[in-house]
Length: 439
Image (cartoon, helix red, strand yellow):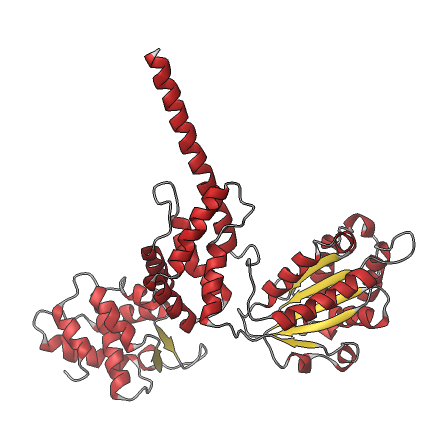
């Protein structure tokens, strides 16, 4: 009997622990999906008017078949793609729009010419079998055939939303055939289409040919990230909070209360303030949250302020300072010599002979330092150029000897001094030499 009771107690305990683990695992999955930029944020701040414009524009295309075209212009990371995705998600909740509106997304970095773009349009509209082995005379004929293939029995074509990321790159396609035909369809009402171009270039309209401009509606929506620190903190809370419809309501209340406490913690607020002052776009916040969210597990069930401090350190790691930790003492001496030359000559360019002369003066005055031959020093110098810590300024076709080619140091003096503090077993003489410009 005792053995059975012990077994039943064990099974109950293991069952309870399993039930506790399940909400935590689902929480990890949800939060990781949010901060991995695979989904739109739970809340959007600062774009209420622009959001209403987009919502109205796309809704009219999806419900009444009205054709439109517009450009979303704003700096990188301001939230152009995020805003479009959020608007489309909301519209897809309407059954009428969900059943009718088709969504085609193109990117100027991927669809580098009109043929590739047309194939991608065919694939996303699932019309590969319809096109088959047909041969068309022009781009316009192919596009018109695709639009006709989407017509229903009443001869009304399904509305299509075209979203063109990196819109300015499509303007570099030969004759701008894709843009001309999409805008022409939108203007002539051959089929209900809405063409949205997303770009960071303010002068993008000037890149368009005259015939393309004449068919574009010239509707422009400018986005500028004007969120406040309070909005940024609310985004932090919304990213880490669980929705009310989560599986375990008791767990949701406990977790969300913990997130509210985190948002008022001075350490976390300091990290958020520093990140906001450095870069206030949403993607930078997602990157900041990535490390703390990935730390959550059975042994670390709650987010701690220290996790955000560590995440900030990882995100702000100076890559060049980290690279300097892996160079040899000789290469480090050459970098310090270049630092001194840059300071002495007020940022003027230098050559290898000048660097070698500076290095020899230092090495000969320090009895503990080994003086390497010029060929060895030149080899180490070429390695620094290969690491892109130094840049040649004469051009690749220059016939000037290697020793006399003009060079530019790509490492800031503060990065060198920071790297020296963390360099393993760095000689004291080298550290002292880096602190002063005159030996």
